[in-house]
Length: 210
Image (cartoon, rainbow, N blue to C red):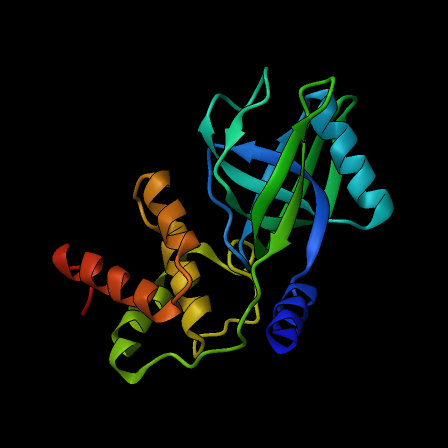
C-alpha cells in the first residue's frame, strides 16, 4: 500500500502548477505561435504590466461563452501559456504586445476579480520531448514550407523544427481556415501523430497536398 501511495505522490510532485492571469480570446494560441495583441481595457493593461514586471506568463484560452470585452468570459479549460516578447505604447492607454505561445495548460480552478479579470490555478501539460516526424507524414512538409515562405519569419519565427511532429502539426493547424472550436480540439489532443493524421486527411480531402 505504501508503494502505491509513494507512486501517486511522486507523480503529483512532478506536475507543475502555476497561478496565472487568464486572457480569454476568440482565437486559439498554439505552443510556438506568435500573436500580436492590442490591449486597451484596464484589466488587461494591468495584467500585461504585472507579467512584464514579474517576468511571468499569462494564459490565453479560447472563449467558450461570453465576449472579449465587458464581463468576464467563460474559457475552455485547456489553453496555452503566453510570454510577452515585445511591446509598444502607441498612445496613452493602448498597449501593443507580441505574445509567444509556450506550453499548454489545464485549468484546475479559476476566479473572477472585481474588474472582471480572470485568474486561475493551472497545471502545465508536460511536453514529452521532441517526437520525430514519421516518414509517412513527410508529404505535409511541401505545403508547410510554402506557408512559411508566404508568411515569413515574423509570423513563423525560426528555428523551424520541420523534423518534429508536434511543431509541424501546430504550425499547420494555426493557419488552417477552420472554426476555432476545431482548432481547440486539435490543441487538446495529447498525441502529436494523431493530430498529423487528422490534418493530412483534412488536407487530402480538399486536394491541398501534392
